[in-house]
Length: 161
Image 1 (cartoon, rainbow, N blue to C red):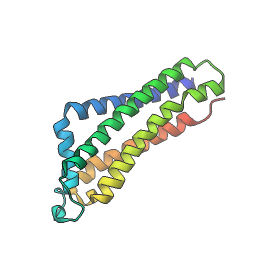
Image 2 (cartoon, helix red, strand yellow):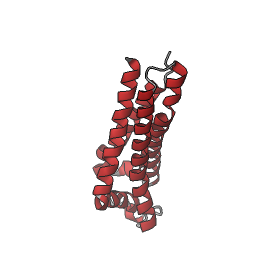
Image 3 (cartoon, rainbow, N blue to C red):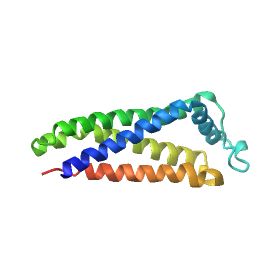
C-alpha cells in the first residue's frame, strides 16, 4: 500500500508541474509581467533606482522561461517516474527503489526552481522581501510549494523493503 501512496504522490507532483507550466505558457504575458515586476523592483519603494534593478528583456524572459520550463520538465519527469514506479510496484525493493530516480530528480528540479528562483534570486537579489504586495503572495506560495515538494520527495525516497 505504501508503494501506491508514493506513486500517487508523484502523480500529484506531476500534475502540479504540468498545470502550473500550462498556466504560465497560456498566460505568457502575465508570466513575463510578473518576472519584470520583480527584476525592475517596481513593487518596492525606491526599488527602481537600485543598482540590481533591470528591465533587460533577456533577463526577464530567461526568468520566465526558467519558471515555466522547470515546471514543465518537473511535470514530465515526475510523470515518467510515476509510470516507472507503477510498473515496478510489485517488483523487489531494489527495482522499485530504482524506478523512483527520475521522479525524485523531477521533484529536485522543482525545489531548485522554487528555492533558487524565488527565494535566492527574487527575494534576496531583487529584494522582494521588501514588497508588501508580493510578500504574502508569490514568496509564501514558493515556500509552501518547495516545502511540500521536498517533504513528498523525502517520503518517496525512503527505501522500500
